[in-house]
Image (cartoon, rainbow over all chains, first blue to last red; front, side):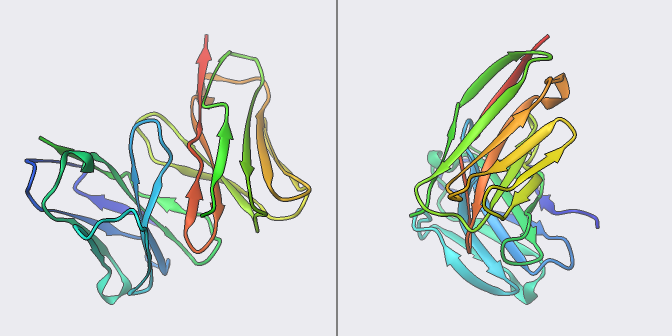
Length: 113
Length: 108
């Protein structure tokens, strides 16, 4: 169990640029979740996958956000035309299945200049 | 949509004092999970409660699930500096809804 890995750890970019984050889940976990967390708040659900299928996407997620999980292994989260309000910690978590404990990665901290 | 409310938002205690955080839902929960996030860290799973009225202990931590399965609590006895962090309850569904957390500060 090598844990959930996220890259990069930090991303600084100018407003309007596109960014992509990667998450490598624990290998035997078939569910993968993306969250956004801002200071003083709990993790806010963005989307989740079961294997390669994206099963739910938060209504809060604008069409600038897209996520993929090709082959049901690693996942990428892309934000197009970044805005100031996108600055946050983006967390990835994986689980063995429904109602199971979530194992989080260290997150990617996004700062928009 | 489903929401879980946590109180208090912040708690400052002297080292050695007890600490309790409460989690409330407007709907009946199938189960509830608790996580701890240290400053600068990521949430780490602590425990899951499933049964009505369930009580589980982990050393100085006691977790309870209400009889109606709409509320839960986490109690820490004799806090230590290592207990510093934010404690979140989470209501699993197809997705997981996290509360805003209770931030615990320990005064030496």
